[in-house]
Structure formats: structure tokens, C-alpha cells
Length: 258
Image (cartoon, rainbow, N blue to C red):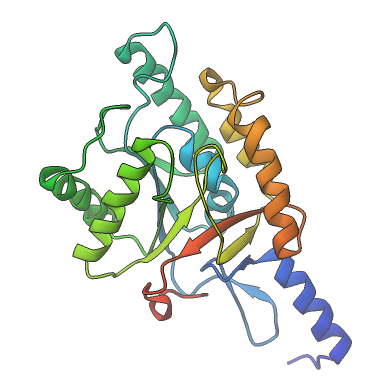
């Protein structure tokens, strides 16, 4: 074992505080203070109401997980069927599905579609069961979903579906909430945890730009998320970051690296 001086220890602490997701189960430090993958590969699910929600709220974090060889599933509640002006629901759904697949390729994630319809999403007993079965099939260690206090009803729906599944699955996975278009959509969001996305923001941007039908440059990314990345970075002491709220009853001890 190499001898570690106080200066070396402080330097490494500073570097790894910036490199790691602060408080998220990304990777641990070994006995020498070097970055080490978790003892086992994690299954991470990121759920969103529409194509582009997981990418804009969690794209940098998704890239960090996938770069560490963890498996990431992006679970879209809808295919964005009413999200393109002048297009029929079928046409819009096909276009936005293709955009989602391209975005997931960039982030090295696997897309899954839950089968609800943009603008007509439902919360009822059948939908709770349907969504829970999707998560049970994936057996996730960590799930990210949208913050429930949000101006868009589809965002609220996916949040409730994930929360219900978490309860009915015995709170077996770590549950985190993320933000999108804060101020206009996500409201009163105060992160408990941050991930430094400075190394992966370019891939997050590329994944968001894959959703060309949504005009990301002048819309959700250029108007909101560029500023949000910088602001969350200021809050946690790095250049660019994503912020999350962790449910305090999450089984943190069961997830390596947290």
C-alpha cells in the first residue's frame, strides 16, 4: 500500500468530490482512495412522462452510470403522441419514438415504452398494476422519476405510478426525483443530492438535441436546462450538475457505493 500524505489525501478528496455523484450510488472509493466500481453492476431505471424528459432531467447522470458499465433503462410513459404541431398522433408518436431511440443510443441506455398516450395519461388501479409489472420485470436497484409538483399532468402521473410501484414492491429500490424546465414545469424543487455532469454534459446535450421535433436549442434545453446545469453546479461546487431529491426511506445500505 502506498503511503498517503495529508496533501495527497486532500487533493484526492477534492478531485473525487468533483468527479463523483455527490451522494448517489455511482461508484465508491477503495482503500487507497482511488475510484472503484461498485461490487456489482446496478440496474438503473429513469422514468419520464414523454420522450426528452429523462434526457433533459437526468441525461448527464445516465451517461455517468452507463460509462461505469451499469445498465440503464429509460422508461417513457408515452411516445409523445400529441407533441408535434400539425402531425397526427400516429405520426408524432413514430417521430418521437425514433428520436428517443437515437437519444438512448447516445447515452448507452435501453428505451422502454409504458404504452400510455401523451395528454391522456391515467392513474387508476389498472394503470398502477400495469406500471408496477414493468418495474418488477426490470428489478431495478435505483429508480429516478419526475417530481410530483409539476405543471404538466403527464409528469405528475408518471411520478405517482413510480411511487405506487415503489411502495407495493416493498421499497426495495432507491427512489430519486428529478426536475425538468424548473419554474415553468417543476415547482419548489430543492435537491438533496447532486451529480457532477461536467464530464458528460456534451452527451446529455447531444441526447436532448436528438429530440429535434421539440426544438431543443430554442426550447427546453437552450431556455431551461443549460441554465439549470450551471445553477446546480454552483450549488454543489462544480461547473455543471444535476440535482435530485432522494426519498429518505430508500434502502441506501443495499446499494453499493452510496
